[in-house]
Image (cartoon, rainbow, N blue to C red):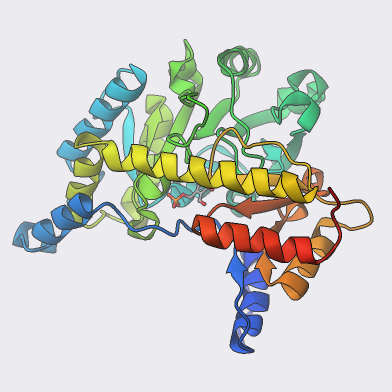
Length: 390
Ligand code: PLP
């Protein structure tokens, strides 16, 4: 047995690993578990993207190492995508980094910008991988609570002045995992002002950029004037095109941060499989119909699920974006107790809110990641528990 390093010991527990074990146990015992706990898209990648990969994989050019820092055609496709979707101009050489999944970039960014002991602001609740990156870099986290009364946006006036002065990095994520909230133009504009005043680099995680409902297209952080001076945005193909297994994403924005990310990628990965890069360029620039249809599918699931929950007496708000719902736990239970209760008694897997940070206590995150019939079946099973009343 070899002792892990101090760095490894800093890593927080992966709470999903624990959850998955519980589900595996029930499944082995023969129970039909409806898995709404993990954020794993259930539908396949659109066929035209898969076909592009198949064809590209036949090309011996792609059997060798691809160029460091990604093919120029992919970086151009990223620029075309940002121009078309958000009217944001990007320099393909200086303002785009190709990533082996957004998770990788979100972990590496802390190593790029933090020295041991430096402070990073993180949303609470938030996507736990921000914490892992900060821990690996030896940094300190300062939580920014996301409260319902503030539409799940951080209230900067409540962040301690010393913390703001000390902070080097801030993570934001809208549409938000886990609260399913979206951001306003005013909020992003005020974030740029704050970051300029306190010399903070903002990392906006735009993983759910394509998933905004009720005809509200989520804003890119880079649409705010001056955003490129103080930050970067991470965009993954995992959710927009159901390509989570492919591991392809990109960071765009501030050229110095992009250079640091590229440098770390040079050392860690050398390059991403060229055929995947070719298929990713196709996804970004060819028809967007499948991406729109996917968003519509999640929106239909959301409408049915939320209506059914309200019908049985679980009063919940409709999510504005992502494929999650953020549900308040009934009185008398902690998040973990209620999540365990639903799993054990109804065989419905959810994620307890406290796994995303202390402010997540009192909530459950539910992924709309099964078809409408199964979502309705999940509500029927919950109804039978007799906890909620109309
Ligand atoms: N950021 C958020 C908020 C996510 O929810 C996820 C995936 O669940 C990711 C990033 C990871 O994206 P990728 O699949 O590109 O690593």
